[in-house]
Length: 166
Picture 1 (tube, rainbow, N blue to C red):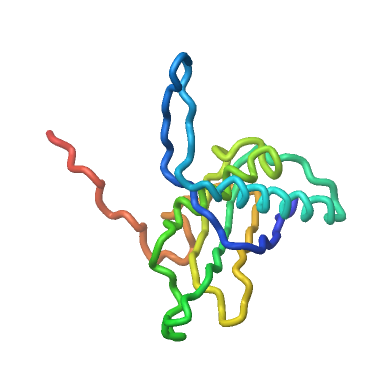
Picture 2: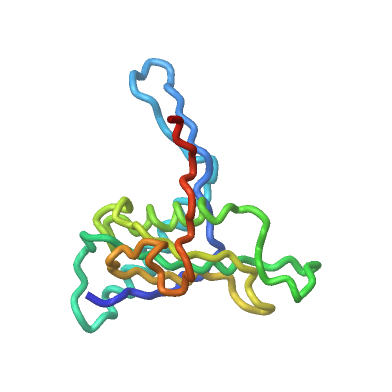
């Protein structure tokens, strides 16, 4: 199966913090997200993915194996920001943007977002007069370990993260 690539136009929304509460008289909690715009964003992502799937020549089946997700977020650029600054270091967090995008693709592109084992991502300012958007690419992967990456001159981790008491 080949990769699926598509673009979502709009301002990406990240998952907010979860909040749970139990209404009076209820026995089960209700879980809400602090970002009220995330559901609308997830609908846009799912719709764009669905459109890309229907436009494919070859049929698409929900991915069941290990997945690589590549995603680039192009967010609105403040008018006062110098043009030489490209990387976006302000909120929202890249990890929260990814989480919202992953959740939107569950049941549309893959069976479950737990299948995503490699993520390549970036968060940037959109170019001048460019509409904010997100570019997404989803593909099966063999799961290459970082120490086996061909560009790494040596293993990334030479020593254990935690010392072993002996």
